[in-house]
Image (cartoon, rainbow, N blue to C red; front, side, top):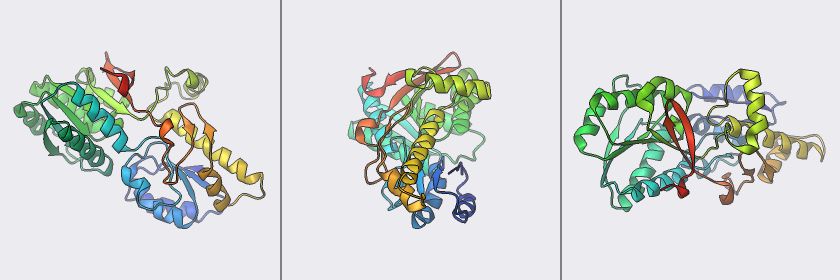
Length: 310
């Protein structure tokens, strides 16, 4: 088994080919991102190579026939629907929904917009390429829209730039983003403009979760920093794959096929969730939780299960 953090969809197939050519590789922990996962999942499936991603959340990954794909986090649709339900309960009349045109960003933004509109919220939609370096015009559009809140579907660095632009433009509404924006990269990039932002995420908080206490201590001792978003999920994905390999090895020399079969049959208790998959590779419904976080005084803190927030 090797960790496989293929962040760039353009180079993911080349990296995947190298992995597939090595007979010693029995399973893959990763890829981390939805685009990269989509780029390699067919080839991995054809090779009976099991995938357990700790953070690829695009819905289509579990509906595109990728026979060996699995993930230890909920899909964007669940996050988007639960966030939208929370937003609808806040009484907003109009919101701006922005995406960065990526597989992840557009997917979660589509879900949020659809659910908001079903709840009667008026939505203005904007698309801003992630390569954009000046969010001034976007921030001006948000302010002029008269929206009471906005949601950004995209990643941390870009969300940080947007936060600064919104502050400069004088937007005083509530600001939300999804799991892609929740990281120290956002906090550093946004500075004080990031305070007050909300983040939805199908992830836990390793710093405060009791079950992750030992993991957090070991992580900090090794890297001199607290675990980041999806660090504990990656730990669970790796240990679940190891458990599957051990199960396969107990029946003889493990192969990609026997490891893949063992992954499909997993029932492993991790520090973030019970790792047990349905036939599509999604976590069992009982293991899927969306949490709400907020940045306060430069620190992103967990507020708890979004269903319990008022």
